[in-house]
Length: 215
Image 1 (cartoon, rainbow, N blue to C red):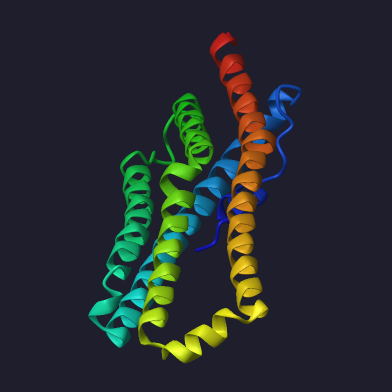
Image 2: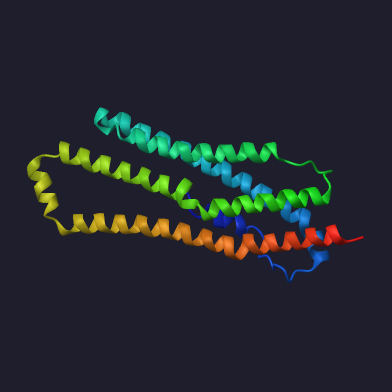
């Protein structure tokens, strides 16, 4: 699963200016930016859901190949499918709340502001519902394969392998690499909140205030 998908969603939009933006420019570009964001979120959600199903099927195939000793992979599959279900639920939510093209501008503005607040919350809690479950699924997968290797390898071969520095180096590199990927996913999505979502919220709220106070 692609931990930078959220950053990619916001990169499809021009960098927001924030409260210094011009009202007329905001109003003229509103529909275009609204459609682009909606399309990007659709692509993100279905891509993530499809990736989750593919990873779960791969885990199931490995479990089938190894046998009952690989039963902890069921836990990893449940974690990944839980993330998949979250993205499917997101699609159902946005479809249910979708506005028609003829909806008033103020109604669309309110809906977009609410959606951006929702996306902001998602990114700020990414560890709880996305990165954390994926990290745990990877840990379950890795420890399951290591346990099976310890059980099935001849003791002499296992002892020889454990004496090899490159084995320990490989394990350390793998652990550090996964940790860095998780950290990177967290950092780029926090940056998306700071540089894209919050300034865009400022723009839309400024436009909303202008429309509400205009005669």
